[in-house]
Image (cartoon, rainbow, N blue to C red; front, side):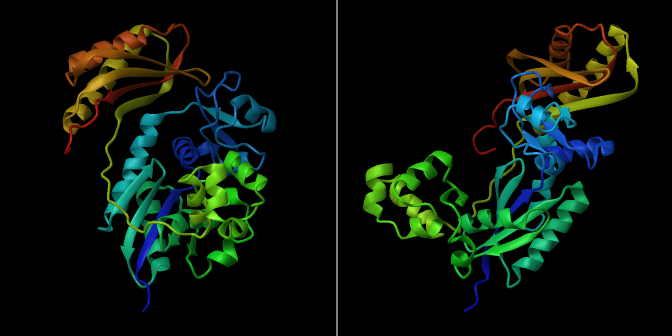
Length: 347
């Protein structure tokens, strides 16, 4: 009987970098690196890099200083979580339009549990819908369980669809190194290599007792299970719950008057407060982002004495955060964000 239950794994291509390029179309096609405060002289790490930057060996988790050495012509941008959360929310809302369980894994990826006799066609339809509603590119892995769907996405990138099941597991995965498996990192792969297990096929044939003795009674045998491609096919729908709300504005002409800056921050703070009221959740922390000319971005924030969604309280906190800047440079962008309290149980 033909299998008609599938797990799809959607992963947004170069998500954070792609969101930044949407905000700055002039950066399209350029090497873009996002992380920390966007200053490669600081001890921050890369959150993500565009494909153009990855060609120079820039990778997530790499120190920004190293990224600058590998790709000195890269455009470095500060991380802006509220914007990424908003973009992610639009993507997840699009996925839920298909009336299937959507299990969110993070800003840029999710599992979908679907019933169809043509998973490739459905995957392409989902990719089109995400692109039309968000202008973001995605890749989709198709599997008969979560593990295979997740791994399949790696073969689908960028902007593609790939199926990985028990039927082609050996052909695709057998000769790959053990750290190609989801759940095995560099350190574990090194320990497996010390036992003589360098490839997925070798690990699949390993004696569970040998693995248990070296890697623990639970984890050792579990690594062999990974090599066999086994795993759960259950997709549990999870609602998207934003952690913050933010508003920002880029000025056509730089602001130089601190009073004008305070006026804009107050206006943005009231808009954020309206978002909090609509969400029905109070803020516990408020922050201000300022981008100074020519392109120098900093943030300041403070924890509120008690949770609140009152517009005057949010505005007062934002004003305090703004006063923590030295407002001596022209400002090209201002933003206000509020981190919300966790939702009540059953929200």
